[in-house]
Image 1: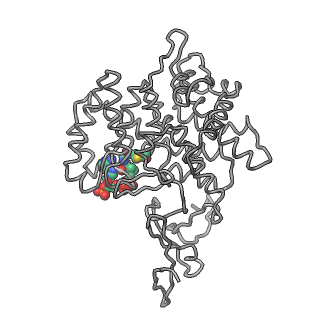
Image 2: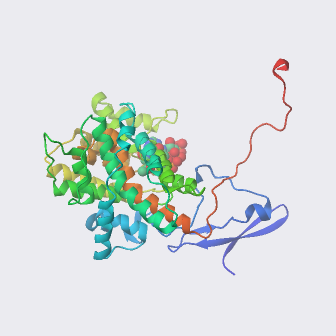
Image 3: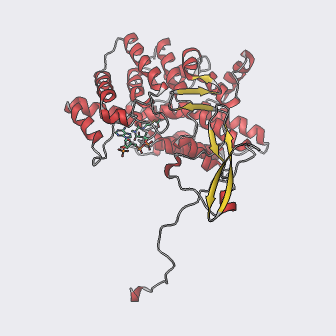
Length: 425
Ligand code: ACO
């Protein structure tokens, strides 16, 4: 018999089995808890709850380790491309040359967006946030591409369509928001080069692709490609558990990612740094973040899982320096960010709370250098996270233990009471 923990309750003894992951992480299997004991668990924010077994991404928050399908993210950022990393996450292995070529052809073949979708874009109010538009448009894709009966074929084509079209749709929304002509994808360009060209090429100023900028975008997207059961991925899995179509599940993920405590933090960091530069109030910002009575937080600091420096932030910080140097740019926000980090890492409050820069702290500075407007930052995160969401959704579809996600609650409302008519109230 394997290991178990013993629970003593109501004069009885219950044995709860322990399960162990491939990296030695242990968990109590409580799947029979309610059935056997009548008890449920209470875990706000699911901070202690494993929702599935997963073979996609390994994170060790204490040691600052992140691996996709076993491969350290540092190696992927250094040597891989986003397209190859996407393939790895979704298929579990790196592609052969032949598989890579076929994947590229499929992505190219599916890169156009139905022309009728342009009218949708044009009718959103100009002030709409691109994340709201992207979430709505990804959901709308189902109407343009109805379901195919063969399940395997349906999944394969939907995955390819999403990977390719979301990139086109993101660039398209930017062009339309500026009142400019949409730039179409080009089959001769790589995944990231194509995105940059669709964003920035124009008849009056042809976009010159810089290999270092293309590399920087690849690194940015690789660093965001998956992060196990985070808020938006959990949303994709929970919504997907109702066996909804993949477009709808991804649309839910995009909506979750939009939040400033999650992916929206990259935009919030830049707004915070800009505010500090304008008001010259760095000391006050740090003091406010430490004040329990003040809801203000240092955006881009802290993480539910990492209790040490986020490995992605380390790579991002290095990349920002290289990129600015290459582009001969100096960004006052980088100066403030470096100063803020230095102060925070020496401050007792941040040390005691294990608050370190997360992936979003430096990413916005990289995106600014590339020319991405601030309100598109989280859209870039969504393009990056897409293969992770898809891989996690696929894994959940194939999981023999998978059930409809339906948490329980501890009811804290009034006991039964009679209805009172309006005249008697
Ligand atoms: N600034 C100041 N204090 C903070 C911060 C911060 N950025 N983050 C956490 N804390 C403090 C909290 O006030 C709390 O203090 P207390 O225990 O004295 O009351 C303690 O640290 C724990 O905070 P929680 O919110 O319970 O921690 P949780 O794990 O739920 O939060 C989160 C993680 C949401 C990321 C949080 O650190 C935060 O809000 N950070 C800023 C937003 C951000 O950068 N989000 C991006 C995360 S990365 C990603 O999603 C891609």
